[in-house]
Amino acid sequence: MAAILVILGVLVAAASPARADGTPVVQGARLHTPPDSHEPQRALVALQNDGPEAATHVTVLCTFTGTGGAILDTQTAAVPIIAAGAAASTEAIYYGWPRATAVACRLEPR
Image (cartoon, rainbow, N blue to C red; front, side, top):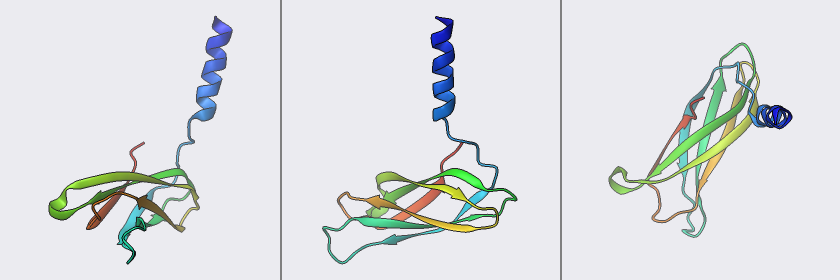
């Protein structure tokens, strides 16, 4: 039984993302709406790591809202690593209907 618990502990530790030592921030997010209503909308997200070390396993949550601020969906986007002092970008995709009118993105809490 103890051996099984040790093996499970090793597997959980291996599956857990590494802690980010950098301090990434969301610089901005822009909603891209293609002219064809059958194409998905995208949140184009700019990130900056002002920390002295690389930030790893960065996850961004983007909330797509519609008319009157109604929440339509929240999607995630990931960046595997952002070097110290570097910028990065990612995008979250919204496939739903109705069309979003705005997007707000934030870092997923750790």
